[in-house]
Length: 204
Image 1 (cartoon, helix red, strand yellow):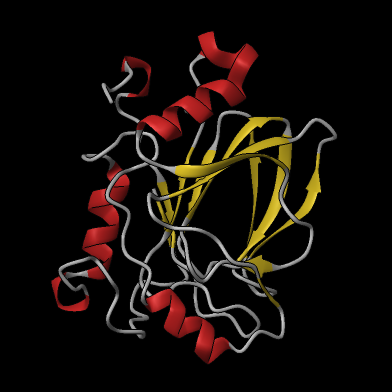
Image 2 (cartoon, one colour; image 1 turned 180 degrees about the horizontal axis):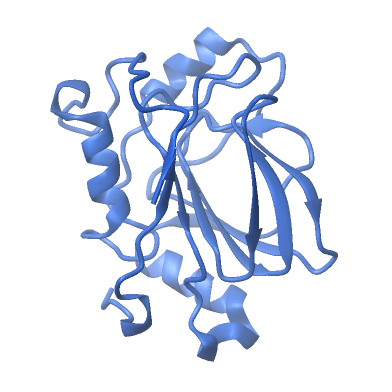
């Protein structure tokens, strides 16, 4: 997909999460937050713009709705969450994780295993969700067998495209670098579980 000029120069914030006591989180990949990516001309139909953008960049299973208010995670897919309308306060990473505010025009990408829940939200909150091509989500909750969950997470391939920017987008480069050549098979599957040197930090 041709890059929208209004998106040029946008770089995501990175959030590395420690393994949780109650949720697995991802061993290597950071959460990505693209802030205020929605062009002003698309504000009146933000959900349509996000749906078209995600689909054009190969992300599927697209839905419109909200975010569950209980801690949960997905072990079989990475997930993009675009805020089309309203605001929300989320907790990522489990009980001891990070709390952040997101609003209209923001887009989060959660690596497989990332614990997430809605703590509060405006009444008009509308989220567009999507998953990389070939991936479908499951629903993990507190009390899940974490060793089994981690094995499934380790088998989830890296996305071939960034949900906003396509094949050459920031996600592709950042996540490949995070995994590193020694930890990735030819298909992008993570082949190791522990690397804690950079987790638990956030950077611009």
